[in-house]
Image 1 (tube, helix red, strand yellow):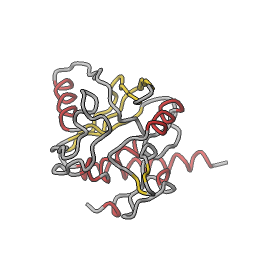
Image 2 (image 1 turned 135 degrees about the vertical axis):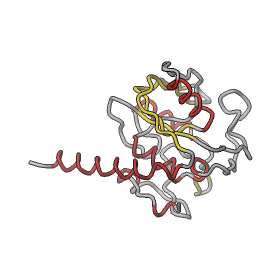
Image 3 (image 1 turned 60 degrees about the horizontal axis):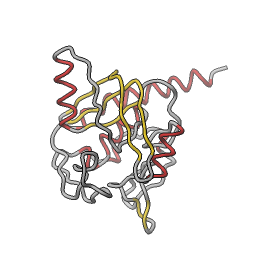
Length: 203
């Protein structure tokens, strides 16, 4: 599905766009006037962690669940735990920060690397040489499958070189083979947000 056909959360409409029209996530660095989608800006990511801002739209996330997009391996691990009736907690840190449910559903469908099973990373993450960044190297394939996952909260650590996140207490698991499968959920989420905004604005 072409990204222009994916309904965009209102919070993303004001984000800067690249030459193709893709909204640029809040944690994405810029170089020579061009967004570097495969990389994460340390200061932007730290700001999002400290101020509880969505890593996609940059807006505030109220206390409560946060979401992230996971790849095939973690999606399979979550599914296996749930099938066995076991709690799931991944203690491995990640560079990928949390976001709103709508923003992560949108990102799963629109980000070329997340949305396409045959997509390969075009740029290596800086210092891609350990257990945190080892998969973030040029040419790495995302693979089939994935999920948008909700967690009760997150932890973070800001160091001089990185901002690391860990996610706690699984609250929602939305797996997909192809990210296009998330379209009905995104449409319903945006409808719910619009309805809630209307109730808030009512006298």
